[in-house]
Image 1 (cartoon, one colour):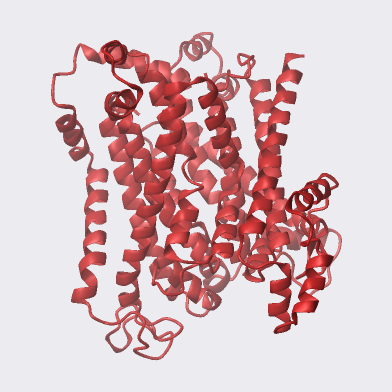
Image 2: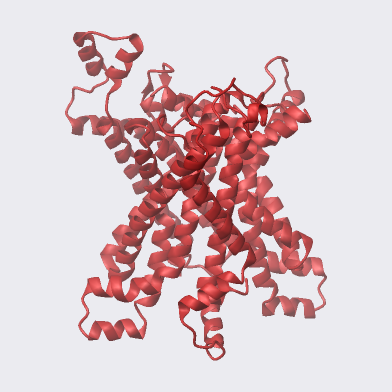
Length: 329
Length: 299
């Protein structure tokens, strides 16, 4: 019951944050130099004032500011993020078309980095001066310092140009018509390099973190007790220790979510991955304000939901946290 | 949370053992004993000196087309070759370092100023001030950083100042959290109560009593932020959002991006420059962290 109340409270606050993002969006549109009519006029190579007035009227730009704002908010409440005059399509539709590709990339990168990161961290913690431990140290430095798009380019050079085992970009091979299992394999083949590139940043974070927290936990009394009971090493490490060692990792997954989106924008651009990031960059180049702000809002929504989910997971795996302040105390 | 408790109990243990030494000398000694951090500092010093003095010693103009485009490294005496317009890559890297480091430092400075203000005020006053400021902090944590900076730079123009601002405005939440945590801890200590009862006003308490003692973790954050901002600038430039009138490492990569496959060296070198710089910064940051928080040394 308490779990439900806390979750609802958090969700309510998330909603407030999203409304704030919307307000910010609206302010940005209005203080930015130039409006829709100017952009269209520029594309058309100049329009006369009468037509520009007409366009402003069509887009509702002649209405009082508060009315425009109300219209904008009401639209978003009905999942209408505006209309892209560059793509000639509703922004919501554009986003929904690109979303699956981004989700596939982001989730694969996270699965790879969480799984490998924990594995490396645990191995390193069991032998703090061993090879794996030094590897984790180097990895966390390199993973942080290398610009992620540069890592991607270097991987393309290595694995698509010098040793051509992976495609240089895109999500599917458009030259061949595939369906069923062949299609899935083709997508996975294209997914490997982008997912590894995006995962590299988070692998660095997770491996270092899980090593530190595992080291902490392995030195604790209850682990000694578990060992003294005669449990196998596997049971001690993976059943008793890991559960507690995972807590900081779970918190971090929630915290880095905004970073995951940033990374995805860059990685998608490098690999021409047809997702939201590529769409955002194209929209920026085309000065397509409704699309770019729609993506900004939608990504904030994703971060809010991700934070909410991590919070819930955290509460489920750590029953000690009962109050809403618990995670910070 | 359990970590903090542990640190405190460790510090109590150590109190009996640690000899009295000026905190600064102690930190410097510990930093000097950390070879990785010293190496990082050395590399960083070299990078800064080269970017500052290099243009006077190596006088090739980074904008001038000196040889045919994409000359491979070493051709015609140009050590790293030329870019897509036939401009000397060595000259560009030397000049680019200035803009890159300047943007990194400016953005980090802005972040630190905002972060300290938010963290200090909320940690000191608590109550509704804390409530409001922390909600604003959460708002900036939810905002997708790169996308928001992209919007700012795209809408208000890609000048070096705007880029630094766009990076700084999204990167301060970490500093705010660290500062607040330190303030919450320190404001309860006896010497703060003593100053308070001696009649010290809020500004004195915040700036002269608490802040100096809260600085160590903030300094570490600030150092890491410079590296983060450099990576961020590179990312924005790679996406085409760079100041067209300035050479920076990020802009070099952005400009040569269409030719990745045929002439990868034009992207490899500036990327390597960024990699080495950020690596050096994070080694220094880790070193500072160990030196300024002796309790954490065991890590």
